[in-house]
Image 1: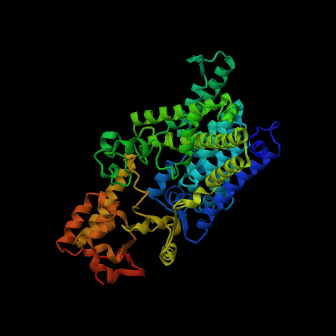
Image 2 (image 1 turned 90 degrees about the vertical axis):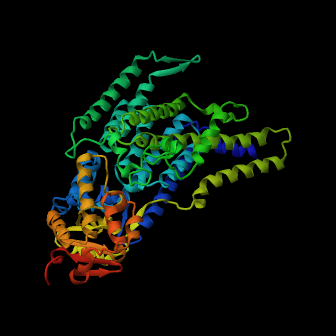
Image 3 (image 1 turned 60 degrees about the vertical axis):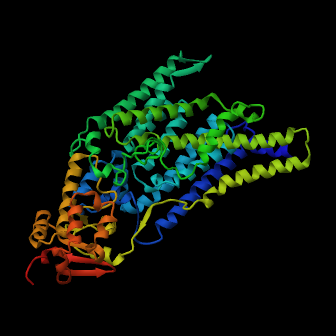
Length: 575
């Protein structure tokens, strides 16, 4: 009984596409689609829903539908300038057919997730030709993907997964043309991934034989890697030669002086806890919060299992292609430390490990679980007390383990993690959408970040996501604007308010009823990181009434909930 079930579960297929391969592959795709549908359900739960990162990286793409949107908008211009070419042109292409970029953004994760699942399944089978392992690998990877906001964002980072797994799949098949295509596309969508590919290609020339490192003697390997590396070099040179209109990137010495990069800042980087900085930091860490530790634990179990092939006989199915997982890890870690050494010039160090190591641990973890399941069944079939009692025990434990892996997301606090933002003030969005396209809105409310996506109107500054402090030319303007806005909103001098309005040509000012209390500033991670916040708090504690507060009743043109919209041209005038 146990032997028969073991053969059905973990026997390597003799042909590439037998029924078992089709079954486990179909099941892999099914779970990928189910997870994406759970995300889509949230994405379409309301008319006003937008993914958090899309609020910055997609909103400006509505210019493709209407070039009149966001005229002379610093925020829209900046995020358009830093968007990779392939990512931009894909959205542009669909926009020419009339598809709203915001709508497309919600469907892209499903498509990318299915493609990633296919490549991951195929990659696993080339390393370990057991269809069950392929299913477990893709299951773990999809659980990873839907516990982070990378894939669901539909932004440039989401394309890393299908393109990188595609690169791995074709690299194992030694398909030079498609390896080069994958590298080129990765460069067009997520350039940081090309560095990892280049590192892997170099490591492909290294062999471990007789307990020592040697270089391959096969000339074809050198030719293959030289051509692929040439493509990588050409792709990266496009970005290297491109200069940003927003100036150079910030250097570490400058970043350390800014509150934005401290532990309480919106772009937290420099923290005092070493293990957090190097391992779990969102921008600095090797493996930031993955949402689940199951693949990592399973991967760690694989290493000792390799030492006991008699206890875990399925280990014999591991092919030499498994060294690819080691090469990915080494290339990723290498780039991680290089990015730290050249801090901010290669963007954030975590980009070189968090995505690729998810793939590594998903594949290794899936293989480990398959080997463990087989080990249980092998023990039951060959134990000296080969009774039905032991067989049922082994089957029960194996079934329980497999079930636990499948349903593990049900025990998580939040799955899937989509970071979809649901707009709660439709009347406010509709009001601004009815105004001319060239208006500019000033506000310190958190709701400001939703206005470009829901109303398609420009804002002076925004909260989380908009004040990106890496390009000095951009952030200097953002910092100046925000300090000026805070100072004007809380100044008791009405003339300072009028000067601010004239300087930035403000049309509307959005405020909250609670804005006149010090706690409004202190509880905002965004506002309190600017110098003007301290002066504003001081004024409020001294009982000085902001001049703008006296204009609310007279200049209000719209109210909803705690929000009041002021007509900027009314402020400070005699009425």
